[in-house]
Length: 506
Image (cartoon, rainbow, N blue to C red; front, side):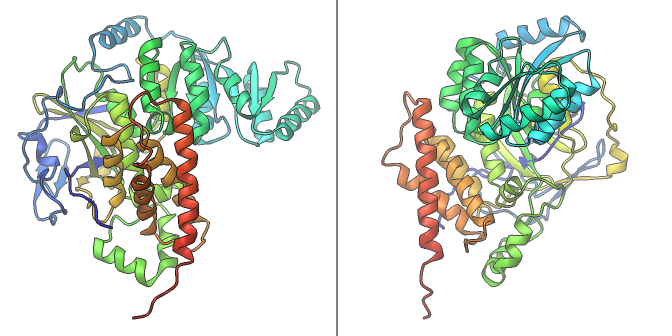
């Protein structure tokens, strides 16, 4: 696949701890390869800052980025970068940490939901659970209802909801919640009147409508659903501004950036650097990966769904292998923090200790560090701007020893460039990118004969085909959902064409 060359990036990674490291380097752009570069330089240059034993690989100097107010910057959806957000943060801080928040947790039986409930257990004086929604795990939902006594409990199907009622009756539940189901049930959980914060741990476009309805009621959003901004950014950001709610990131990279921006004055942000683990193929050269894709597709499939650092879900593990996860995070960072795409970079950081960083106008870099523990970004999203004392293992830099960084190869990882291209086009194109990726990701994992390198080809094909119906102004939720459905159908049909294509022997 031939992709247009464009600025190379430099950064991307996982979770965090309540520790900020300020690294001041003579030229902060040493983290970023030249913006005119098309391929990654060899790791021949190494710089070391003794203060934190940080080894910077592939370091090279480049022209400075924009002044932070240039073309492509937008109003952020998170409470940063503005005078009003700075005042809001200070006002909340001065209230002290004796706050009490009432939560609605969407996706309560999944990873985000269960970890959020662990935080509730650790801080019972600070959090109350008013609503839970989940898929079809009625048994686990029953456990959660008995423990947290929510007002609303929602499951995906009427059968699951009925099973939940039966289990609760058998357990002698004396405070039965309102048990609902389906998309309407998720909305009911998100809009329960008593909750002030909605944790959106639900996966996929199903999280869009309940998030929108919660925003309209003035509820803060602890954002763990990527589709909310990647697909719905053109709709969500204006609503956030209109209703004055706080959009608080609950994933590690964006929480890291959000934490680094606390106290940075309006106009102070110059550049965002997202860290990435590098995924399953980070230790292979481009040539080695492409050769493996040709000679042993089965080995590629097994390796692509096995992460070198964590035991994650299959979908996100494959997104990490293609590095589409990082491309999607670039789009999300644009909507959350307002930075232009020229001022959001990616760097591979295999140790996954630095969860992301920001560069300020004076070229100082502020990074957020911590062990890979998803509870840490979640706890900050529901307690912001307060710092709750948590019973987690403190970070020990001496134990880590060294931290390394290198630029991603965009020819090896074409999904990165596709995400930047979609983001710069804006409008409905990011919804098509996201849906096409989800569909191609699923087809690859279903073992229908789709190759690893077919994933970006299908996504690029969907983006190209969508140019005929692309919309950038006055985008509605219906537009986004329609584009989402169309992109999935496009990938499904073209996957058949790829898999069934005849083998031509020359």
